[in-house]
Image (cartoon, rainbow, N blue to C red; front, side, top):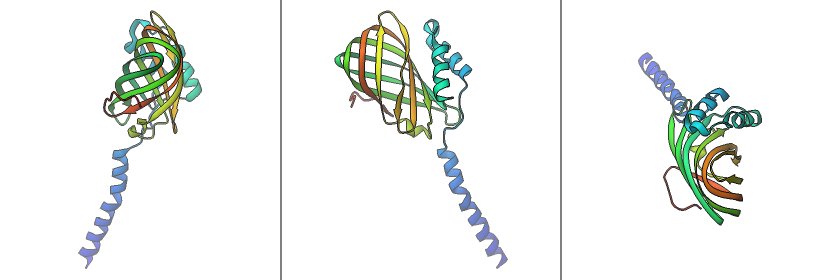
Length: 190
C-alpha cells in the first residue's frame, strides 16, 4: 500500500512538472539587449556607412526601451507608385537562439525607384519567437541616391519593429504598406 502511495505521488509530481517544462521549452523571449551591444553589432554589420547608427539606436531605445530581439538581414525593393519589398535575415534572441526569417510586402504611394538595403530591425515586446510572424503596417519615406541610413516604426499586436536601413540605389518618395514576416520565402507580397 505504501509503495502504491509513493508511486502515485511520484507520478503526480512528475506530471505536475511537465507543464513547467513545456513552458520553459516554448519559452518567452524576455532578456533584452543593451544599447551598446546593438550599436557594436550594427557597426560590425553595416560597416563604414554606420555613422548615424548610434543616434538612431539611442532614439529607439529612449522611445521604446531595450529590445528583446533583433534581426540582421538584407532586402531589395522597387516601386513605380506601387511597389514591393522582399527580404531575409536572422532573428537573434538571448534565450531562444537564432531563427531565419523572411519578409515581403506591398506598398503604394508617391514612390519611384529601386533600392537594396542592409537592415537591422530592433524587436520589442516579442512574447515568443512565433509572435514575429504577421503583417506590420507602416509609413516609409526614403530619399537616398548613393547611400543613407533611415529608421521607421511598425507595429503588429504588441510587437514593435524598428527597421534601421542602410540603402543603396535610386529611390525617393513616401509610401504606405506593410511587411509580412514568414518562416519560408515567398514571392507573394500579400
